[in-house]
Image 1 (cartoon, rainbow over the protein chains, first blue to last red):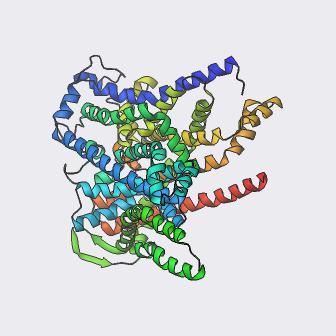
Image 2: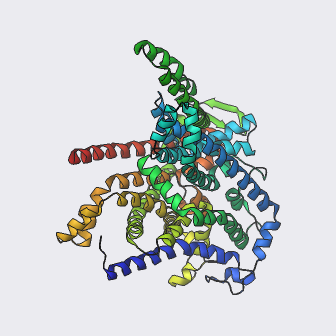
Image 3: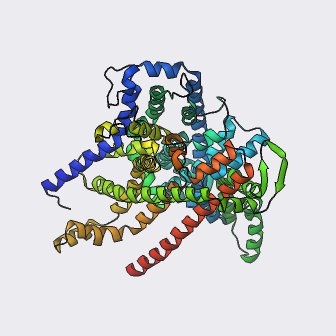
Length: 276
Length: 317
C-alpha cells in the first residue's frame, strides 16, 4: 500500500511512543537499583549519584544467590526436558496418524486454561506426603506439565510448514519413519525447536505460584518467590533498592534473549497461537 | 480423563480396528505405535501432574480438613462449597476478579490493536519496536509488579510527582490500589495481545484496504468495515487467551497489595486458605470453583467462536 510521507511520520511517532511505553518501567527499576541512601526516597526518576551498592548487597546475600542458582538450574533442566518431549509429541501430532491425537491436543489446551493455583494447592498436599515438597524435582515436574502445552503448540505449528516431501523422499529411498525424522526433519525443525525453547524458558523463569507454594526454604526457592520474602534490616522496612537490583539481575537474561532472537520469538508466538 | 484409559487406546483400538479394517498395513500399524511412542511421554507428563491433583482437589474439597489437625478431618460433602458460596467475601472477591479481568482485557484489546497497527504499518524502527515490545512480555510478572508498586509508592515513586498528586497513597484505598494492579497487568500483557492481533492483521490482503481507500473510505471506516471483520478469528483467540489468563491473576496482586484494601482475587483466596491457613478442604473447594469458572468462560468463548467461525466460512465459500 502506498503511504504518504505525512502518514509515515505518524507511524514513526507511534512507534517511538510504544518503545517508550515498553521501556520506561524497566528503566525505572534499573534507575531505582542504582540509588543509594537518601536517593531511594527522593521520588524522582533518576538517582543523584549512581551506586553499585545494591548489587553488592544482593550478591552478598545467600538468599539471593541460592535463589538465582535454583532459578537458573531448574529453568534450564525443565526447558530442556520440556522441549525434547514436546518435539517428539509435536512431530507425532503434525505428521502421524494415530488414535488419540485429538486427546493429546485437548489435554494440552485444557492445561493451558486451567488455573495454576488450582493445581498448586493440591500439589502442595501431595508433595508433602511423598517428600517432593521443597525440592528441585518438586518444582521441575509442574514446570514441565505447565510448559509442555505451549511448546507442543508452537512446535506443531512449525512442523506443519516443513516441506514433508523431503521426508517421503527419504522414506522412498529406504529410510524408516524414525530415520526420516532424525536425519531429515530434525535439521529443518531446529529453528522451531529453538523458538519453543526460548518461550518455554520465559514461562518457567516467570513462575511465581509454584515457587511460593511448593517451597519453604532456600533449598529450591526460585528468584521471583525469594523476592517476595526478602526482608530488610527491620521487619517493617522492605529493602526496596536491593529488591530492584535483584529484579534487574533476573531481567537481564530476558533482555538478552529478546535482543538476540526477537524475530524468532514473534514468529513463534503468532504461529503457535493462530495456527495451533 | 484418567491415565490408564487414555494410555490404553493403542492396544485396544488397534485390536478392534484390525478386526474392522482387516487390511491394516504394517506401515499404518507402525505409524500408530510410533505416534504414541513419541507423543506418550509428553502426554503422561501433562496428565500425571495435573490429572491427579485435580481429582485430589475435588476429593479433599468434600472434607472439613485442616492440615494442623488431621484427626479432626471429616466428610462434609458439599458443605465447603456451601460455606464459600454463602460467604459475602467470596462474592466480593469474585467481583474484584471479574472487574480486573474486564478492565484489563478491554484496555489490552484497544491498546494492543493500536500497537499491532503501528507494528504492521511502520516502515522504520521495526526491529526496535519488536524488541521493545517483547521486554514486557518476557519480563517476570513479579518484577513488573515491583516496578509498578514502587513507581506508584508515595515513599519511593515518581508517579505522584509526575501528576502533582503530592502524598497520595495509591495503596490506601480499594479503587486506587486496583488501578495500580490493572496498570501493571495491562503494561505486562498488552504486547502478547498485540502480537496475536498482528498475526491476524498480517493475513488481511492489502488489496482490500486499497480498494476501500479508492472507494473513498476514511481511515476509521477502513478499520471498522475492513480490518476488524477480517481479523475476527485473531481477536477471538487473543480475547480467549487473555481473559482466561486475567481471571487467574495472582502474582501482581500478591506483590503489589498482598490482598489488602479488598483487592483479594479468587486465586489469592485459594492460596491463602490452603497455604497460609492450611484449611485444605476449604482451599481445595475454592480451587475447584475457580477451575469451574475458568472452564465456563472457555466454553462460552468457544461457543461464540464456533458460531462466528461457521458464519464466516458460510460467507466466504
